[in-house]
Length: 266
Image (cartoon, rainbow, N blue to C red; front, side, top):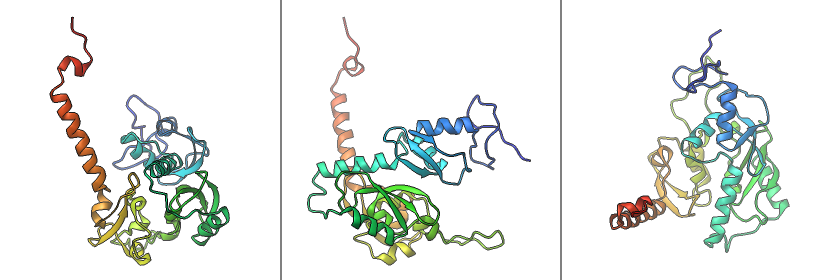
């Protein structure tokens, strides 16, 4: 049987799985990767490409994530838990007035809305649930638990959207649907502004324009699908960050080096 050494520097243990080009880790190092991402495993490691039930070390919510998702979030310094992420997003949206005129949903309405898309409603993640507020749901087919906004549940679980070949003798499809991918752009998709058929047919390389909604500042804008699939970016956030960087640069340009470094002179 093929074995592979753990990819963590200094670790000589055997990796829990094998790969051709990507890193592979032992169980102990995988647990460390989860802890860095703010998670603890609830079930044994199922493999690198499978969803694993975890518990958030901050809020305690249990949900499924793939190992690579946590690895990617760790690389950018972001915690994995989507319950914490979307709670924070909802708080910011309320603070900016983004939820002022939106409809409030009862528990029964939330249950019906998720049930229609094949999800079992588990819990709300905020005290009062309005449009696009986050909730916790479990797929009735594959039992994967996810924390997401209500609008994100509307297209069902990836297990039912995935059209890629599963039989080893079948020819793989040449195009990957955005809805069947793990692209971060899915969280930016504006379900209210786009037609229902648009997401169902959009591929990762589609060059047509679609409507998007920034999960940070709630800005709605239009951009080509392939550009967002490669790297979702909000024009307002980019402009704001550029202004902040410019202001900081100008401040530092007139600040003595000793003051900037916090060095006391004399």
